[in-house]
Image 1 (cartoon, one colour):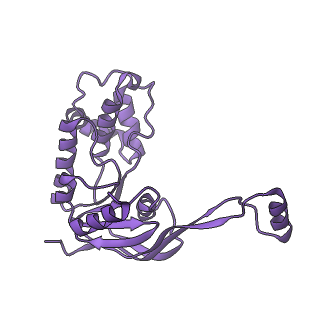
Image 2 (cartoon, rainbow, N blue to C red):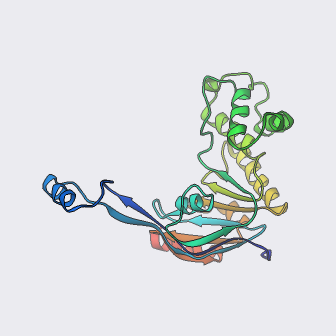
Image 3 (cartoon, rainbow, N blue to C red):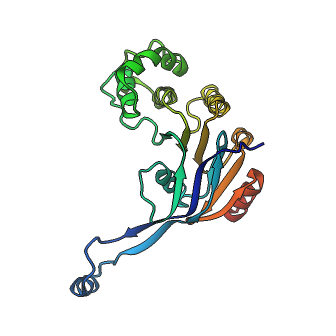
Length: 249
């Protein structure tokens, strides 16, 4: 059963990008471009008339091919990008998990990176002090926290980043293709954490190229976007079948 409180609502939400030279359009400029062979600006609608309503406690998957507009939608909802037209509302606090580990410094120790990464996601030093034991335990990196990040494998860096950021999320959680990281055991822990987050009344909206079995079980609905257009918003199986059929998968 889907919870009743709406936390995200969009109405004809659209986002346009202008691709090409940024020079102001003038007669001279147009003639010069044509003579020089420059390509004039062209409009790319990354999103076109997205209409969705998401309830508290739901997990919504956003699927579609590369360039479909999935990440653009998350960035508009998070306030990173401004919509071109239409409107949207997000109730409560927004937490974003984009580009896991962005901001890590390989010359710093794992502990130093946790403080820095925590600060980037709104955590004070005192707050990081409080949750440091949980971060270390969750990451499974006890014994490596004084080592420089340059000595870590890529999987260890991902685990450290996820273990840190997961302590700071609350409310509406927007996730861009970093649902689960690390080895199979750690991935399972990640998915269990997302389930716990939903059980606590939070909402998760995540972008994915496709949904595996575990994610299908967690999702209440799926949004399928292609070329910026909303193709389906509703039943998970129906949406995934439509996506797979369109892509010839």
